[in-house]
Image (cartoon, rainbow, N blue to C red; front, side):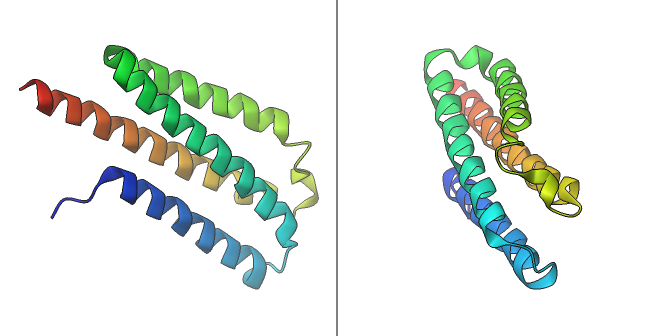
Length: 125
């Protein structure tokens, strides 16, 4: 049984949020407003990146891999700019709480792009 990559990426995204929110709230006893704002920003950015990957795959599929690298760089730049607005420094061990979800979602974006590239190669054969 083969799982649709769209469903897999969506389920893993929400699973990441639920695990991190549970740790945030029940283990570390931190304010949930900060993490909800952070994941709201991450989810908007993640859906924007997935949409751009799909659009790039439909228009110029030969540049999909390079464009994913550019989108990851753009995501890093946006995270650097928005970190002051989200008040990251007020959270103890903020690097642990904000870098790990960033890398998990970057890995999901990369996985989705790889699935699109492999799907296109199967269509050519």
